[in-house]
Figure 1 (cartoon, rainbow, N blue to C red):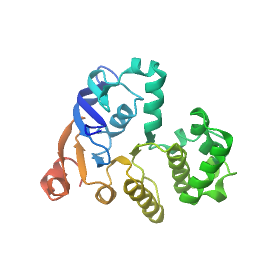
Figure 2 (figure 1 turned 135 degrees about the vertical axis):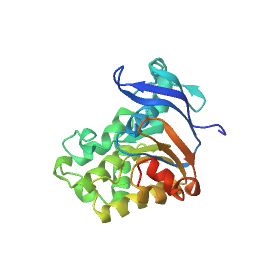
Figure 3 (figure 1 turned 30 degrees about the vertical axis):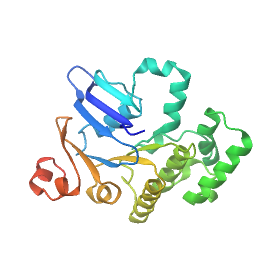
Figure 4 (figure 1 turned 45 degrees about the vertical axis):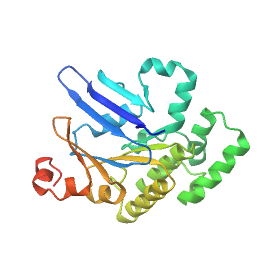
Length: 246
C-alpha cells in the first residue's frame, strides 16, 4: 500500500461545547514512518491518539485508515473491526487504566484470547514476548505489585503480543527512571527496525529526537502549529519557545 495508513482531514473533537480538545487537525502518516507528536501538556496529544485508535470519533472532519473512512458504524462490520483492532494498539499514559487482570500472564494472554488464538499458540507467544521484554520472572505476579517501569513493559508487551502494525504511545517515558527510559527507547527502536509504524506523543524532546524523524507540533489552541523534520523544528529556538516546548 502506497497511500497513508492514517489520514485526518480537518478533524475537531469537543469534550463539551466550550472545551475543544482538537481544533481542525489534518495529518498523513505513512507505513513505517517514525512520528512524534510534540506539544505541552493540554495541547490535545492524548485526544489525537485516541482518535487514531478509534476510541473517539471526529465530531467534525474525516478520519481514514488505509484509505477507508473510519466512523462508529464501520466497527459494526466484524471484518473491519478485526482488521483495525489487530493492526492498531495504544499504550495509555496512565498505565493503571490498562492493567486489570490478576497476573501478568493473564494480561499477556488477554488480547490473544479475544482474537481467538489457540492455547498452545498463546503459550508460545507469551514465552516469546516475555523473553524479549525480560519479564519472564514476573509472569505469576500481580501487575499492581510492579514498579512503574515494569508495569509499562508489561502493558506494552500485552499490546505487542498480537503483532500489530501500528503502535501508538502516549508519553511512554513519563515517570520512568533513566535505565527504564533507555530500555524503553531500545524497545521502540527495535520495533521500528522490524518495520512497525510507531507514533509517539510526548513533551520530552530528548526522547522524541531518538525515536522519530517526522514531528507534528501541537499548540495550546489544540491545533497543529508545524510539521517537519529535525532541522525544521529543533533548530528553531524561537519556535520551540513559542510552542512552549522549552
